[in-house]
Amino acid sequence: MSGNLIYLDNAATSFPKPREVLKKMLKTYVRSGVSPGRGSYDLADEAAELVYQTRRKLTRFFSASDPERVIFTANATDALNIALQGLLRPGDHVVSTRLEHNSVLRPLYHLEKQGMIEYDLVCFDDSGYICPQQIMKAVKHNTKLVVVSHASNVLGTVQPAKEIARLCSEHGIPLLLDAAQSAGHIPIDMHSWGIGALAFTGHKALLGPTGIGGLILSPGLDIRTTRFGGTGIESRSLIHTQSFPHRLEAGTLNLAGILGLSASLDYLEQKNYEHLWQREMALTQRLYDGLRSISKVVFLSPPPTKQSVPVLTCAMKDMDSGDVGDILDGDYGIAVRIGLHCAPLVHVDLGTDASGAIRFSPGPFNTDKDIDFAVAAMAEIAAHS
Ligand SMILES: Cc1ncc(COP(=O)(O)O)c(C=O)c1O
Image (cartoon, rainbow, N blue to C red; front, top):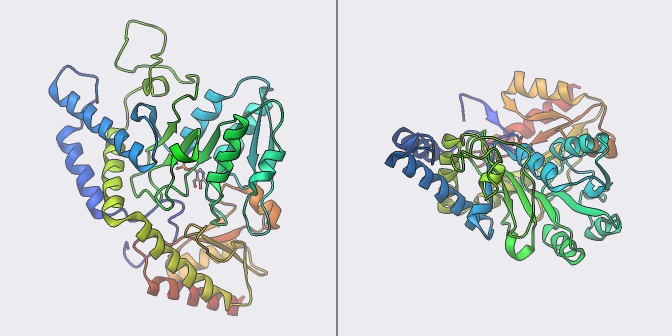
């Protein structure tokens, strides 16, 4: 940890990054940090090969079908925007959920306000899960896309993506899965689950740097270009290159970010990321057990289960979450995320939209001691409120 800070905000971004990842990223960037695929010299080819290797690693990691359909983006928000704007056409209907992050809610709202689409949002149940059948009930004759957040960044609940994808496939509707909170925690099998498109971000549980993410598309999915520019090929034409991945990538790629992501994928493989998840879930359970003994703590998250990511959100009775966050930071050196977590509808439905809530999200470098200290801090805050 940095200084005495106890960092429990890994759902915002994982911190610190593994040293091995940063070292490897720097070493490769120092050696090959030129514009990938744009030059006639060997080093440009080498950089392009490193980019391609990362596409291949991502294809394996998410059991996707084709490295050419791995599109590098700035983050999950960018990937979701590219997908929503490129897949939807005037008159289309979309089914999504009230668990979504603003990175889905805002693009959908924007497209609706432009008069282009309409959408319906399915409610989550008392435990924070989406029932796949409810999604299907919301499907209409013109539904062209289902968008679901795989893991809720407020509740930590992991949605039954495989079952949702199966039902979507039966109806011939692609599922766009927002894996911002699940990628790196929960294994995702794009091909066998039948996921149409997957949006991920590199800087959370994938343990890479900020500024890199991706959109992975299933083989048959047609998508329009919404950003235009240089691709390093077919430069004479004013029409943006239509072959993948260039169709959706315009401009020089974030090579440093891609190399960082490549190194973090190696790290996750070497450490076995499911073991990391198990460890982080044990910390989340310890936190839950500790906070449960404080009568003023009210949980928004259900108890951690095998269908959860290491995210635990609660409120303190009669206190604003911002005040709790300030005390945790100022008096105890504990970093958490307070407020609405960019997922306002979850808070509306749980009645915490006025006061917000406090989100704890342990990461791979937290210890039992960090958790016990956080529980003790919350107990003192409760006692003095
Ligand atoms: C569920 C979910 N979707 C999307 C995002 C957006 O990720 P990014 O900020 O990396 O684009 C987040 C970020 O917190 C998230 O939690």
